[in-house]
Length: 161
Image (cartoon, rainbow, N blue to C red; front, side):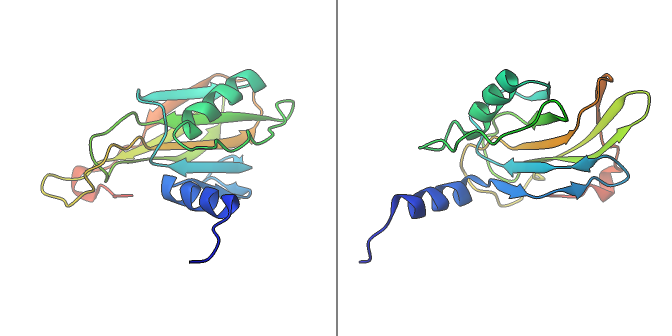
């Protein structure tokens, strides 16, 4: 058996946690997203929607995202003079098949964050494991109020993640 390094083990653990880190992208019809993280294994057990405008809040939210990974990855830098963080935690679920996604961020007289939550339908095959989906993005700083809204979708056209 080949020697397994600590870096390899950490890489596998991060991949298993569902963490995805992306470069800048544009939210559909909205503000640019500088960085994002998504996953299914947050430490956060309660549903939460957060607006983070300082390092203390970011360090706390990162701990809730990565608290189930050991060793916990270092907190990525965010320049809060230019950016803010939007974090959405779905809360603990008893099975897999659940997901949360920030689908749009638009700035008008306020910042409107549109969220899509999806859950498995009755009878769907899912993993029998506790999950805690999350989606976190870094966007340009705004001093405007932030409003979270659930995406409105017809029940027969509900998209699964």
